[in-house]
Length: 221
Image 1 (cartoon, rainbow, N blue to C red):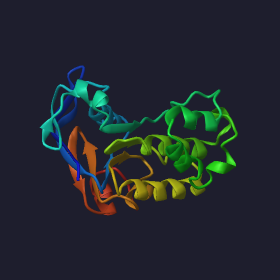
Image 2 (image 1 turned 180 degrees about the horizontal axis):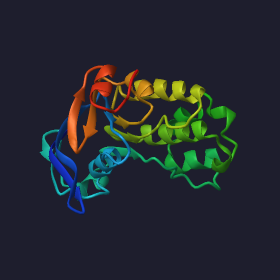
Image 3 (image 1 turned 60 degrees about the vertical axis):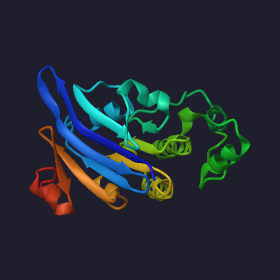
Image 4 (image 1 turned 90 degrees about the vertical axis):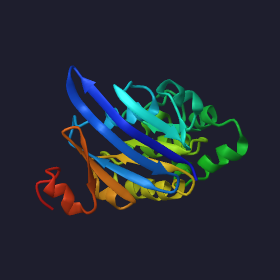
């Protein structure tokens, strides 16, 4: 089992506290949900953990070994799905798969994944949002990372692909630790093992849906 530990993570923007002394732990075999209103620091948290945004303070350990932020990307322990698409739009899906995986067995895992055969000959630019997010998650999810950071994988996608993505994440969590943030809270809560809310820079544990109401994330259920 691999373990990602974060202690005393703080981030300020122009002297405004965005993240205040955040502590979290994620192990392979679990999915952690992160909630928060727009601008609360969810994406900031993921970017810091991926190493592309510098924290004002942080202690980060992978398997009890302290890891510097600048070392995270080169260590290849953590994969990141950003909010916005990163695949070249002019490529065909089959070309994008080959770009990520040279190994034939790895390619086959993607090509034979549910529904990929229905769009593998199309260009990235011609995919629906659900097809695109599913493809991106397939590609990142099958790289050799122990941890995955997912920024809004369910946002604005069609119901069919929400279900397919949820099933994929449940498969991936067998070997990976996953941290996911998304406003589609019902989709997130169906698959997560633990959850927390970021409010006013602070981390608040969420044990049930009603906690999201109590803490002002939802007005009602």
